[in-house]
Amino acid sequence: MEQITIHNLPFKPFVTSDKIAKTNAFLAKRIAEDLGPDEEPVFVGILNGSFMFVSDFIRNYPHPCHVSFVKLSSYKSLDSTGVIKKLIGINEDLTNKTVIILEDIIDTGTTLEEIYRIFNEQNLKQLKIATLFFKPEAYKKELPIDYVGLEIEDKFIVGYGLDFDGLGRNLPDVYQIDK
Ligand SMILES: O=P(O)(O)OC[C@H]1O[C@H](OP(=O)(O)OP(=O)(O)O)[C@H](O)[C@@H]1O
Ligand SMILES: Nc1nc2[nH]cnc2c(=O)[nH]1
Image (tube, rainbow, N blue to C red; front, side):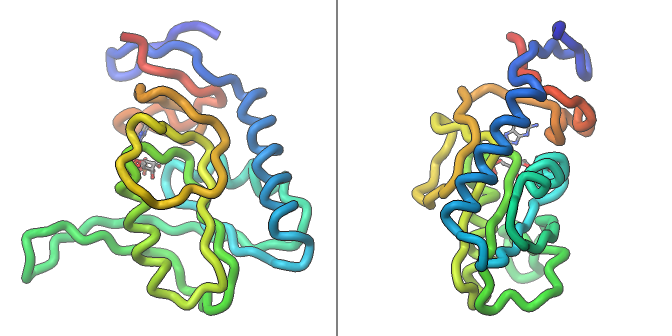
């Protein structure tokens, strides 16, 4: 693998598609062992970045399961200055279901906090979080992350679903900013 340029910035090879495949298999195995064969979890991918991770992860999951995707949209409420996030895409009843959130990356934890807030309003049986990449130095929240694929340093990455200003999601390998 060689250095690449996206929007005029250099990126260097960081995690190969082979290593990602092995990490997916490891995550699926651990989650399957914890949940057992009878749980029928609902895996929920957070769009856009997680689409590749979810499609590969789910193929490694050995037991019956459901898969769904949601997107967080920001909107300004009329009566406040804050930006409130809303989930688009969940239209099934999750009452008493085991929901496993699948994130491509957890960085500051801001997105995760929104996810927790929204899913905790539903009467789930349990909510667990799995992420392919995690940046421990950047993480600012106390919320538990149940399953981490790879811990990485606090530098911007791109590829395997993750974009840099819209580009790079199609790359099979992951690259790290090189500066
Ligand atoms: O922990 P945080 O600092 O909140 O960062 C993590 C979030 O950032 C990325 O999504 P992004 O908002 O870039 O949207 P995208 O998935 O559509 O690229 C990623 O997919 C996570 O959802
Ligand atoms: N593409 C990309 N999106 C992010 N969102 C939060 N951290 C990152 C990162 O390192 N890369």
